[in-house]
Length: 409
Image (tube, rainbow, N blue to C red; front, side, top):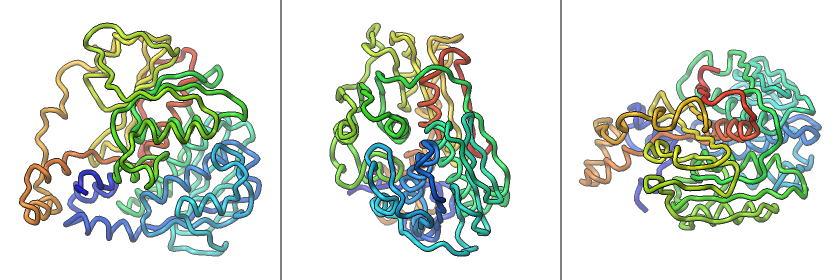
């Protein structure tokens, strides 16, 4: 298998920054990263809290390759989506997370959800409420019963980012600052019929949030559009695919999982073409989660009651940034994305030691350039963005453009 198809997109950060002299060196570095998740009694009574715990278990193991450990309420049963009726220990094991005993472990960064502070060097507590979340650097945590699922998923993504910034970059403020984030004001109900274009890590994080917040017996109808296949690289960032899905169309892999919990899914593997005339959506809500400037620029020709477009930044400093737009809005899509696509004309830099080592070993400049051109991406930024996107899909007025940076919340 070519490295471009197997690449851990978060580990690529170490290659792009010159911290790793090879891909194997990057993997060795990431295998030193460990994380602990401490969960208190009663987490399943609050939707946001259970969503946060499930998202932590799913997303963290993809980045903290040295191991993720769950301590706390192993035997409490979950209530959401595919995990309904399973103990937390069973869910953790399914994600490759080990179950440990409560105790003091100062060396391992710890995220606390409803448990007592762990007194670790990084001891980050989640406080969840109806309007948003707080990350408490003193390990204090708690929840409100009316906090929505989107708050829990977004909080989990932000908390993992703080832990990652501490262990990878050694930033002293990461996990040591109090972070408060309020979701943009939204009124209305969950959108139960939508067309989602793009099933990368952002699109799957949106669907993960939708699945966790769906009520028993609630009929959600979706059209899913994507022509790509699941690769080993997909597993490093995406929340809804696993090893058994490699080689399958993303549409099929994701639709199968959603249909198991009662979603109705229309599968679509065609490319969306908007430069040949107007396209009328059969769904009132269209969500666009693809990194394609041409498609974004053509959204004025896509007719729907509401269109939400979301993109995540690239590069060693941009991967924590999220930008969203709603249409129709104050600006046309073609005005938002004026000019040339900077990425299309950007020269791919293969001067870093890891890429030079790859070039010497393979003699394949095209293959090396292909790997270097892949964007840095993380499951936790995807989780945050997907949760906010799900939240904004309920919005009735109140804005048409939003920008977030997980390092600047």
